[in-house]
Image 1 (tube, rainbow, N blue to C red):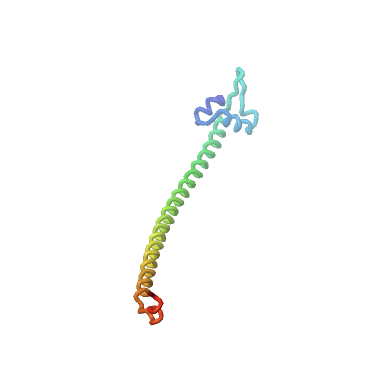
Image 2: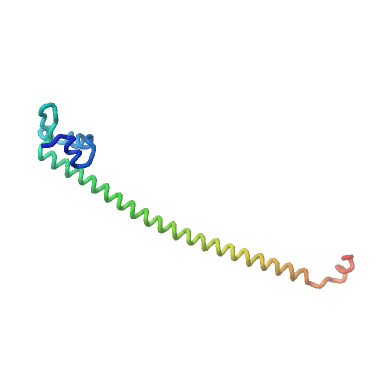
Length: 122
């Protein structure tokens, strides 16, 4: 037989957790001696199994979340790479556009002037 506190320490949980589980058990699973509540072996086994199941479920959920987080990190890295590539392409395109604009300006300035443009130029 164990007290609530002893079982809580053994399982690594709070005493309140053991008390909560014990209240769900039939009254004959709790023995009161010297103003202390003791749990029967059946109660200890039941509470231990319930808490271990809960801890396992929590552990599984944590593993799942860690796996999902890793996948999201990979997706973010991939998106960052694509964004960098897009920015490089945009910068390259802007450079080419500027070069084309300069060439067009040069061609327009080198174009021979008509007789009336030369007349009014001075």
